[in-house]
Image (cartoon, rainbow, N blue to C red; front, side):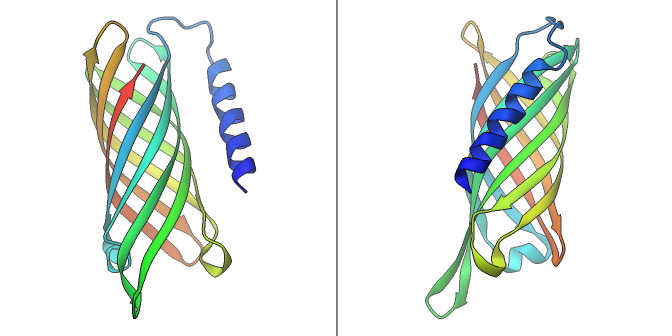
Length: 173
């Protein structure tokens, strides 16, 4: 399963790199980030919070527009499901999207993709993901930038949805 996820992620990023390769208005960036998630709706009855990491690829295609690819890992933690058994479940979200920059720092983002559960058995599966968000980037050094983003994320599959508010703090280089 992990080999499939890594292969799909690599193929996904290589594909994004080939799209609009002739556009050079800004340089492409790769970002490493720390993610936090806070469940909303019915999902907050099951999970309290999640922490994770993400890898973001960003490729400019116009003056204020970039396409993105994002892969990560989120681990949700929750209250006792049964006596002395706490809810813990990991997911690998794989998303593609776009960022529109309002000037040089503030952006609106939208992503679509899938989230793959790392659980086995009845809890496993793949969900459709959609994500609107807002963020800002701040230059750090010659080529880097600090990237802070807020988002609403919804994962849908047969049997229900999981929704959460998320935050990402990353460094792009």
